[in-house]
Length: 465
Image (cartoon, rainbow, N blue to C red; front, top):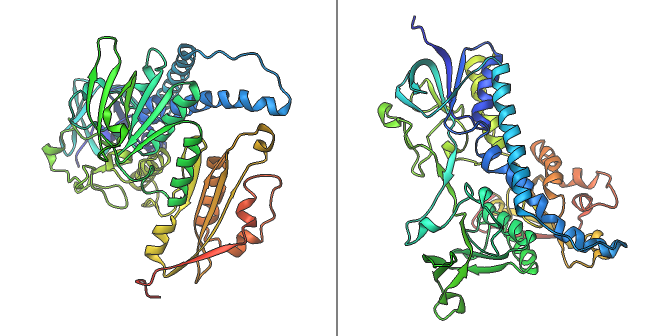
């Protein structure tokens, strides 16, 4: 029988890799993990956590303004970008250390440095070679940048958290969740924000009502949209400002070019597969560049697995964590554990935020002959006194035949918190009658989900029952 240095070697110290390593060690396996940067991965270092801290910071400008309607008189507030970033850095360093120390306490050998595969059972890391019975690739993703003149002057979500000062004028290129989230952040902190996206509407893949509602609410906050536009060139001026040229609809005033202090590209992320030595052992990649895996996370090489964003399936931290845990349980636990990604809730920390779970209206129509739509668009109680012209959207998508709730969507304050509970209901197969029979919590926005009564019906004539 072959003898290995480790039973399980994890490449990548992000959320999925760390969870897999700790659970495998908990089952008694000899485990090592290697990370080339800082433990915690995209989420902790340059993603979910620092972004959420900046989102929270950016809310205060509206909170101060809204306070007057509730009887508060406040002195003029002053904001320090430098102090915010310093506080963020302190918290991120603390969390990274927690991730690393937790690995050590779990009995995992922690390595620092780039790792690559030499063959199906050999990893080179920290200048040494290690043999392993099983290997997990959990190297995440990285921002995508197009090849256009001057792209070297742009920043991505990696660099945005380290800006020395708050830019006065910001161009954000992209229409996904990172783009709309940073639009809200910079707008709330006082920057002039323009969002340029080549598509017809932001947030492709989300429910169309959600997309339109968020676009309208962001426009109310004076975020300028340039839809159906592509950046063609970025030039740096002698004063440091950036001149940006666009293409798009002929004759549109936006095509003349604009000047910004920073250009943030949020045009998607791609699997971080470079330099791993995948070619040494013939690991198959999907057409989109992600590592191809089965329902158990196994690649075409029987002892090599992959989890998280490097597989380019659902790029969410909780999904990576669930996948890492399932792989560790499959390899070293009592049962083989597939990952069920049929019902995955998600949030966009835009302003206002989005919470969504299940099928959008268009997705539901593709799968079902007839669906019922329940929706409400209302002014939240808070803004009856604040005077702010912000509205909340809630929406349910229901299969007409079975009355099972297929999707729940919300744009408004606390939407991410609310959608987590609804995800449980959808996973359990709740029907519209179950929602109707649930007593409401009043006065809340969440109660709208159990008080919706007016419906509209959509049919797919191409779909036979």
